[in-house]
Length: 258
Image (cartoon, rainbow, N blue to C red; front, top):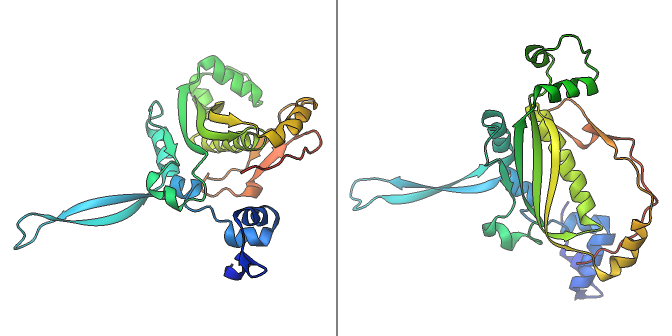
């Protein structure tokens, strides 16, 4: 969509910062034109820039000169390959905190990195998985469990967050990283185990306190289930993820602070 700079003016003057933020929040078409946050999560996860220096030798050169080339690192692809080839690695990590791109981001990443960890399942844990998934319990051995594609390992995910809007941001982060853990587990043939959150500055803004107190008084429900279509993590779309038996209390209106 082509952006028109006249959109950034009102009554012949530039929008104030507060007016711009309010338009982003309330005007969908305006947000599509001007709401790009820059090279944040998706860019860093899938296309982290890598600068390579290559010496050049030639006639008449007293010392080798250098040329530079830029390639891109797909951290998600590398993470999956490392989980498959070296599941006990302590380097199963993805980072969104790239200082060289920080000035081009509207907001530095709040959840700036995550780490995966896997462990072998015991034979009893594999049997429990097979019972849970309706596999007939007839003389099951490790080889038979392998043939039935019963997972051999658990996988967990821990994400790190520098700044956390507790009522609005963290629930969304829990849901999105929970889905990511399920997608990764399906991709590598493991069973999701623990989802772990590490927060730095966890806060509730003053204008959110009444709504937070109201939320604490609401009824709670059993967690829903997630169903994923049989696709690669790189091909999955929004409609390939189904949330089953989701229940909630009525909507609570929170203010979005900046």
